[in-house]
Length: 268
Image (cartoon, rainbow, N blue to C red; front, side, top):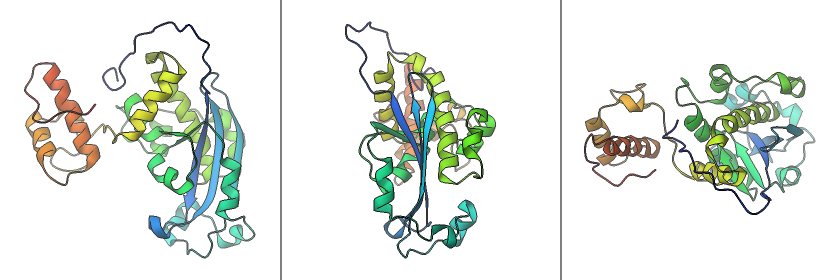
């Protein structure tokens, strides 16, 4: 973790910290179609204060899919029926309730952000969890709940009548995850602003994987993958961007240790 989110030197500020510390943790459920044909059918959010650790202000709304058919697999996952959507507001109306936060966080912000189109800075808890908990066996939300582990006791009353893959349920679990991420990573930052800046930068980068998801070293921690394989991976055209980014990171670490030269410029 020390190399995945380096310790920042602390410089006392002459000015009061006026950076908003509120993050709206948000989740969407959709019809499960391709992006161009998809429809948001549920939005859920909860606010998290980075300064105090408080989780509050739960919001949820179903959305009219506007004629978009719900994919059977997606329906089995979120269990939102056509009857539940009868009389729901349009997406354009519903999403306005969730607008206006200075920052948003989602477990897979690359999925939620382009669908919601909410202005503000965005944080990806999946990518941040890879930095905070690289040793955890999997980084999906329910895996993180189980293996970090995350204590959901505080938010259980707000989850009543819901289940995983309903928007508010997942937003609440993600808020608890973000709080744990902040517990681990915030002490390495100068202040809240530094944490938000660095978390936003991590969100915009490819994911720094803990393990490869393919090939003869599938499932092996990246730190244990031979350098010659990482060099091949970086040079091979058409490789997954997350895998290439991760390979460059680990090759750069080996170069710093004097192990071997880096074949291409690393992106950290």
